[in-house]
Image (tube, rainbow, N blue to C red):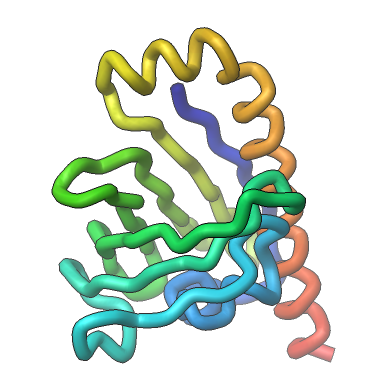
Length: 153
């Protein structure tokens, strides 16, 4: 009930982190989440900060808002958040950045909550959702890399 994708980028960890931790820019990269906004007075990344993402499931719909809480926030290294419903974590997303060969290896990952409902969901539909998530992570990282490459030119 988890997966990850890694892509090498010709940018510093700080440059990568600045993009992945600015949730208001996610619409430029993600094939599903087309906008996001900080909530409850938050204006940037910090552990405990809340935001919501506007999602178009599978790029087709339905469209809905997902509430999120930042769980990891280490500049140049890691940015992570939980998608929550009420007080329950539904899934967790993270970006880990490692300096390698004059650039950065960037890993995006997701993990579904370890609950009976999620295990049933994964058993019935996980193969399709897992494939969609993997393609989405690949597309997101490729779009971030493209932006960093354009900025470097």
